[in-house]
Structure formats: C-alpha cells, structure tokens
Amino acid sequence: MSDGTCAHLGVIKTVKHAQRRECAECVKMKAQWVHLRTCQECGTTLCCDSSPNRHASKHARSSGHPVVASAEPGERWLYCYPDDGYAEY
Ligand SMILES: [Zn+2]
Ligand SMILES: [Zn+2]
Ligand SMILES: [Zn+2]
Image (tube, rainbow, N blue to C red; front, top):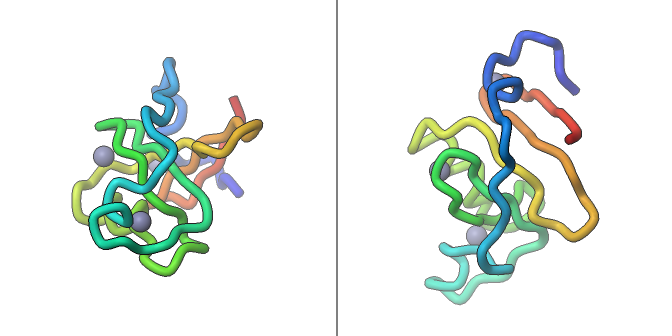
C-alpha cells in the first residue's frame, strides 16, 4: 500500500488503457500470463508479477517507466513499482 511518498501516481490525469488484451512480450514467446498491466508512460500492456515472466515489472525496471494500471476488467487502480505505491481511480 502507498506510504504517501510516491510522486508518480498523483501526476497521472488520464489513465491509459490496454489496446489489446494480451501481454506484448508473452505473445512473441508464446508464453502464458495471469493478469495484464498497462504502462502509463508508453501504453504497453504486459503481464503481472503473478505471471511466470513478469514482463510489466521487468519493463518498469529496464525502461524507468514507474506506473502501471490494471488492465483487468472491473479493476480501476494504478501501481508504482519503484515506490510500491497503489492508488484507485
Ligand atoms: Zn512512484
Ligand atoms: Zn508477459
Ligand atoms: Zn512503458
């Protein structure tokens, strides 16, 4: 949960949503995923930390894009990887 020190979540005014309901990296390697997350910097949709390949968190570390939104139907929340911050919208 948020400890209140995240400077990334508060600046997001418009949430980017998934264009396709699939992990862009898993599709290439024919892997499975559990849940999907959409990067709020570049709009790429990748798989969550419950998925075997954890592409969303790898993307956050390698690209420096901190915040993802859940791409699951009915879920309306944002997560910041570097700060472990969470916000509903
Ligand atoms: Zn943050
Ligand atoms: Zn993936
Ligand atoms: Zn990104």
